[in-house]
Length: 205
Image (cartoon, rainbow, N blue to C red; front, side, top):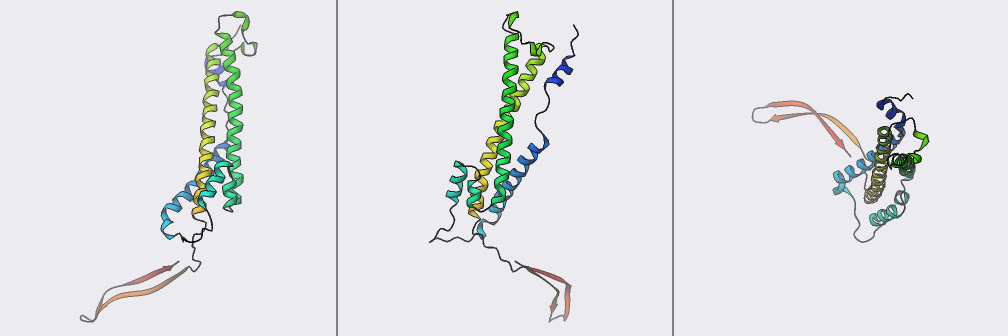
């Protein structure tokens, strides 16, 4: 009976199950959450706060996104972020389930191969060596664990994003933005001459 090489067998079993779109969605979600956090840190001193009346509650937004992902974004009126939240969570759940199913199949197959009973061999993988089945089992186990970790990160980013947007909900943005360009010089009355001349740029926002 002819067997494939170990590398060829492993390659046939362990095929990549993560499409590029999975990483793109996670990357986009991480970027908009990170940018919101950075914006909050840079401009927190400019946020207009009302000590008497609370118009928008960051605690409520955080709690809502903790209980139900995307609900805090709805409360903050950032509706366009809700599909991104659920796309990220949906993909991680899908790949976690898929990889766990494959991991269970190869785990059982490897267990039957190594239990010492020749009558319990799984015929579905009879053309693969024990090492190839073990490699496939470990491969899908790693993918399952990675999917769980990414899912937790997406869930946490959903909470952080809701909290940051709620803190910036009443951010005072001045729409009066203008730029002025004028010549400038340092003229001395004593020497009756300018030590330097140039152009001054003024930006108002």
